[in-house]
Length: 385
Image (cartoon, rainbow, N blue to C red; front, side):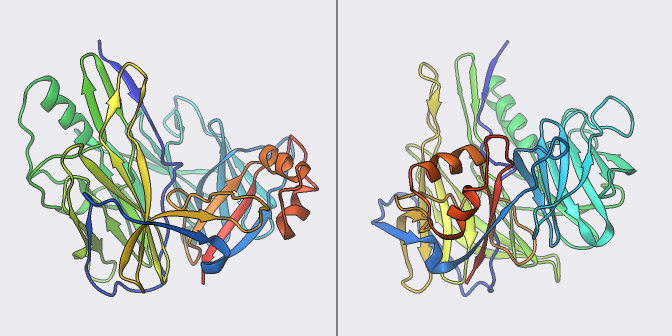
């Protein structure tokens, strides 16, 4: 039996952020180059808002699942907690874990449609999507269909979702372990109906060579995660690792157009992910498809930024100026919806430690002074200037 080592780094689900402007032109990145370094101060290009979440026995939580215009959904184990995004007040608790027809085994992906008072919960174990209202009442469910393994499920418009069919990972594993050829004409991105999960439109992304964040060495299968569906204004970017082009898929006409072209690096194979997009900067991350089965370490990453004004790429560090010491901000992971660019969850115990060392300033210092070890995270809401 294969021993599986899986790195799940999309916070969940993590990933990525939203632009406030249209694409000016096609960008080309050479993944073979070693770019110069650049340091950015977060507050120079982002408005930063901190919101402490209500802390009570009922609303104890840990990580962000999804966010809307008014609400944010956090998770604690398999229980979803709905909070008011501006005040941090707890609104509702949704605990529908179980084996029943109206229950999930675990809420892997979660998307919120506030306009229709609906929460979409993807249960990978049962290959189903369950839909609840924002109070947790069951509304409907649908199966993904034979041979489909949906991931990166993203709210697209009032009628549709866009997703990745993660069957590509199963196809690659079969190709390597069973010496099979992969079908490079297969489609792995779809637009789905919110009502019944039917495939409304296929989104074909052409590629000639398969590239996925997976390494198989002997009896070890190691996988990492790179998000492939990235919101950008009302549209989404489709980041198919195997393709040398990243496409923008439009909500106006449901067509795709090139957004960025990659000059690939083959040895070691280097993949690219897209993160926050602001009027000036596009944040990215490379990942080398390397894994050491002996140490259990691999998939090294480097953070990059494309400066639109300078028309140049840099290795980048983004620092939060609300700390008296250098504190890096990860603009590759976070969940967005609406006008905000990124949202992060700052854990209370880390803020308390920084406060006691005199490392905080301004509003963040004031909030940290009120926290205790049992406090919920503090939201850091980032909006592009």
